[in-house]
Length: 353
Image (cartoon, rainbow, N blue to C red; front, side, top):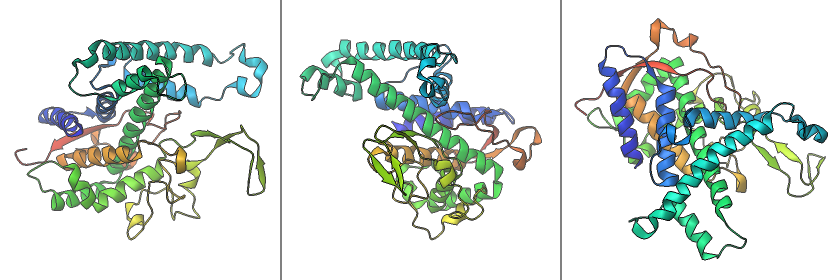
């Protein structure tokens, strides 16, 4: 499934590359692919932007992430919560209605298909749990919608954002792009596309992805909550306290990372630092029981898409822009995506593929 969808994107880019020096909106391409992969994995089929809302998946997901990260005055001054001075409650209710109608439609489709489907997907499994009554609590459609919403937002935004930033840094550092292309040529060649089985052999790709995730923390301030009273470094933290772990600061700490503001994949040469939550200086997916449940899948998707785009195409910036002038402005939200779309010119480089 992943391979088929990635190949469709590559084919689309190849067709655009045939038009002399066509400028491609990489952000839109990556976002569309991420939406398709997420819908296929979670819902069992692809949905178009119009199925969700006229604004499309990317815009609506960005709105959710932006509103969720916006400080709410009502949290600090409860009496202001009723007034909703910032309009956050109103806007969140509007978005909630959009997603509720979309997810209700998906659940209804699965209920109607019943036993006619040859294979079950995640939604079918959730419906089986609901209908069996085996859950330890009253599990109903509300819970299914909440789980599907979490999976949709978490999977769609983070992977696309990570890929977008890694490609941004590769375009800003052409020598790194060339070095990665050389590794891909040596391991894969130019007669075929990258397979998932190739990823474990691509050591420099692993370093590039690690450095991209270090420099651009996709979700730098995900809130947690203290489940019980505890003491950390002589600070007493009460049960119920909201806790923000500043991954952005940790991953750019000059006491840990020499020249932390620079994109240097070589810093991981000979290093055993892992991105799966074992090393606290690099935690793009969190750590412990509250780490990202889709971490392994996310790593594979990010590595595969970056590898395919770098292997299949040479890239240059439009209008003679110099790499050092490519902007790195961030968009505010739970996930720190690019403020502006990433635009580039592809040139296909594989032989008869």
